[in-house]
Image 1 (cartoon, helix red, strand yellow):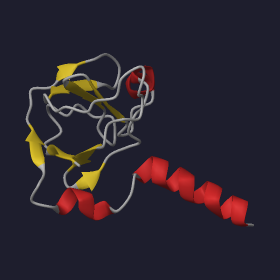
Image 2: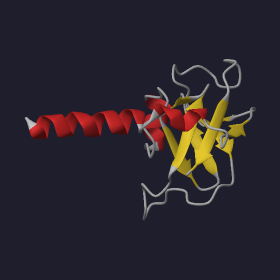
Image 3: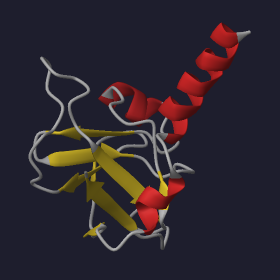
Image 4: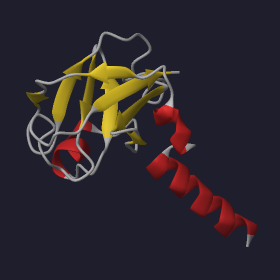
Length: 119
């Protein structure tokens, strides 16, 4: 029973990442369009924030990406999965955030606000 409960908790944390209030604070930094297409459902925001994931440290980034003050995720997603599956997945890689909107719409035209929190 404990193992099942733990497994469900891990899945929920991977999907939603943690407390929803991360995206309600005054420390959010806007990601403003235009966003470059990265193919499929993926778009790129150029942010220049240190601590991005790397091949050697694929879960290093603590960046949280928000859409209209709601946390997107999961983070640390393979870029191919962001392009193909979308649904709010994102990756902080190099000087960029590769991300998809929560409903796979184009973030350049969907009238939502995107931001990030560098923890």
